[in-house]
Amino acid sequence: MAPVGAWDAMPGRRLGGEVTVPGDKSISHRALMLGGIAEGTTEVDGFLEGEDCLATMTAMRSMGVAIDRSRPRVLVIRGVGLHGLIPPVGPLDMGNAGTAMRLLTGLLAGQSFDTVLVGDSSLMKRPMERVAAPLRQMGAVLETTDGKPPVRICGGQALEGADHQLKVASAQVKSAILLAGLYARGGTSVTEPAVTRDHTERMLRAFGVEVTVQGRRTSLTPGVLRGTRIDVPADFSSAAFFIVAATLAGESPLVIRNVGVNPTRTGLLEILRLMGGRIGFQNERLAGDEPVADLVVEPAVLRGITVPPELVPLAIDEFPALFVAAALAEGETLVSGAAELRVKESDRIGVMAEGLQALGADVSALPDGMRIRGGRLSGGAIDSHGDHRIAMSFAVAAACAQGPVRILDVANVATSFPGFPEAARAAGLRIEVVPT
Image (cartoon, rainbow, N blue to C red):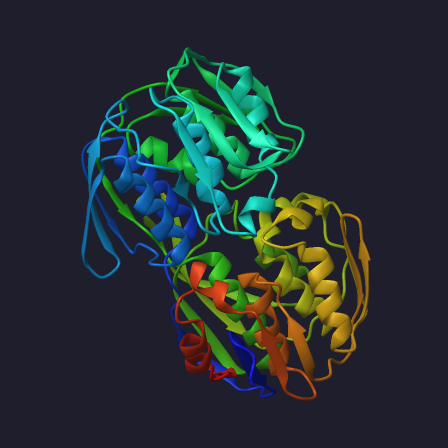
């Protein structure tokens, strides 16, 4: 019997034309949360209708937020104000959405009621103390289970603003602290060891909250959020698979429309350009406070590099695709300082090394990265371990492989990129869903 939840991806270097990808997952999560606690109505255009963001929507609805999604990819959120959420009936199930669980931990730390956050088998293995510890410094009372979910949050606590010095660069931890800071007495600041994505800061400003950024230090002054309009650009992390595919397997330029190009997210572009990639911007503009452009990706021959450490946090979600690019580049690529990849939806260092080795690549997993000696990839079978970005990365690898690649356990791709096989085929990738 054929495996359930699998793809067959075939070799074929013929990418080109135009493609669109779904809305940004990070921005969609944040729009739901901030719109829900704002005063008045917020309209969100371009919402990602993937399972992760739908879990956040269900959670906000269960706490009394009315959300109209009668039009595709458009939400109308009727905010209840900072103190208008109501206790949910039972635990909030965040599915596979690590961003949602961590950010909601911060938001719920300031509520008057108790809550419990749970998730699927993958999410229940992910570390939560990195969020819980700084929130406790602000007066929050919450418990994890051996450092992992369930997360039990005791409401009714008086939070105090604090000055946090983070040891690990994490936009999710920073965002959770800032959301808790909305409910704290006095200002809250976060200093990071490296710059991370700043969607939360930008969106808080759009809702009228005072947020200042000085280098790696972000400071928030509590205030009332006012409903607004949020235009969600296409997700750069979803575009990343087509950027790498068009670079490696293009026969003509590929245009990816309306992509968010926030500089705290586009480290992959800088890395690929250092490797010889040819990616340009057209029609640059702003969607609200987020920079957007059409990306033009031309075929290129890549060469291995040592990835600059300052670019690692700016490309953390794109490393599975980058590892594929490195495996097909000329020479050696070295990635270090990326230990965060060990605690994503899967151990992305271990799983990518395992998969690339199964296709014949010369790779060595490191504690905080990978050493990859570029060459050819053979066909074979890959277990994605239920990680959406691993699955999509090997669909890209197959385009340049010497034989077919079967990719197992792909159901979780729907969490971030519903309709990926169809979009991939439109761009020129040869991928078929294995019948169940």
